[in-house]
Length: 277
Image 1 (cartoon, rainbow, N blue to C red):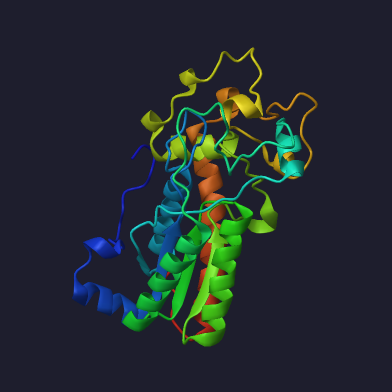
Image 2 (image 1 turned 30 degrees about the horizontal axis):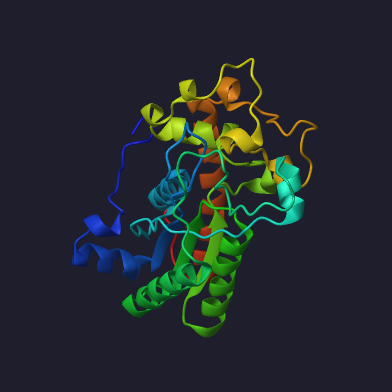
């Protein structure tokens, strides 16, 4: 998979035999749940970008500190955009647009209804706790407000009312939030290039002398999402010229290092040994 490192220890639950899972759980009852939708990420990136990002981070963290990684949940939700958000992106404020499914896109995203995501994640958490896991780390690759709220609400509920602790992380989490991630932007493009370069096709985008309009390509920088668009509603940082596998690998290292430290601290607080390296 491109520059993705060779797996040194098999940690994918679907490839482990029961005795291997039990042995790992006895040493540290830690499991990772990667989550993300199949969603439009410009025409140049895979539809599974969010989930693939979460999967890569979960696997790398598990390699560093132990634990088992669930098969990735390719599911996620999004909501209709508010008039204010539509204005930031360059749309008319009265339009009806859900998530990143812009009118110019050639394919719609597979967004689940919010309640279905909640039911699926709730059921998986229940089953994992029944199996014996006591630290469940949700690695989430999707930033929609309602999607994040579902995961945070369930994490808080299960932590308060079950024998397990559930911690949600963004796949791009980093120390001091140094990674300012938009949508199909330089960072997301770079991370996919680091995982599998042939899955990214920048030639589909217009020539570099043409601006990338949000509404035309479904590519948006983080500042625009926060209400600070450019005057002509175009991208500030250009994935056509600034994205690279090397940058992607650097951002993965930042995220994996940060999440590994947080999870290791949680394991230590629970009285379990931590495997690093």
